[in-house]
Length: 250
Image 1: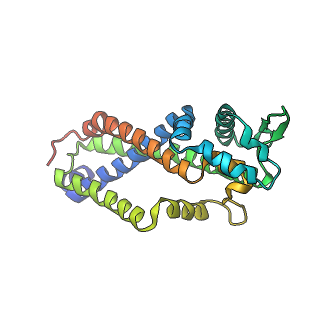
Image 2: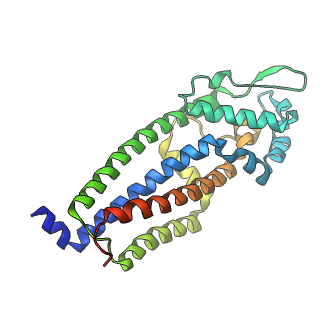
Image 3: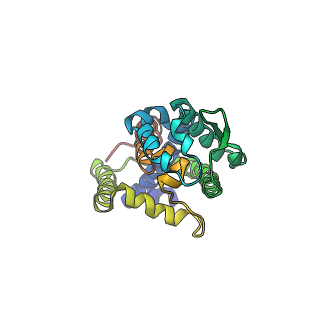
């Protein structure tokens, strides 16, 4: 009875297809995150494209926490420090307080303030939660695929597929047009991080913020995440989604 209902219900089939595609998007983003993490989020590339060195030399000399000498450190020092932060936020942030830099006088100084450490610990906890969400999403994707394959469902009509892609894309475009990336970026911070923990840092008070030219770097990372996720999505859609729908497109 269930099998017959699924086969004869265009709307239910469309919903299963849409859920499967949504789950595949999340799966692709998870894979893209792993690729970006292994590539240090392409920081070397964005460092040049966003002229992060100029941000450091401009604002760090005004640092209010006696870290003005960081402005005289090398590009390699900046690359190394960013890489260390990436490593730590993916390892519970246990060694964040131990991160340091060496100034021109060969003095070893702490890289982060207590507020920055607390924020990066919050980021680390968020990544842990997102990892669990990613694993749960994989289970959902496999479950949906099993149902669709077992019921021998057909792909939705091409018109329905186009509408399902165009509408969310249009909504995202409208949101970005109305509010801009920076405003949405700050809004999401108010949603996902604890109210009492600082997450906004001026360049003059934070080497972390200067090092990342926040929020510009995150816009760049969003681009690289999206591009790689899109590549994964197209590949898996063609070899996975198309094949589990064993009927013909309507």
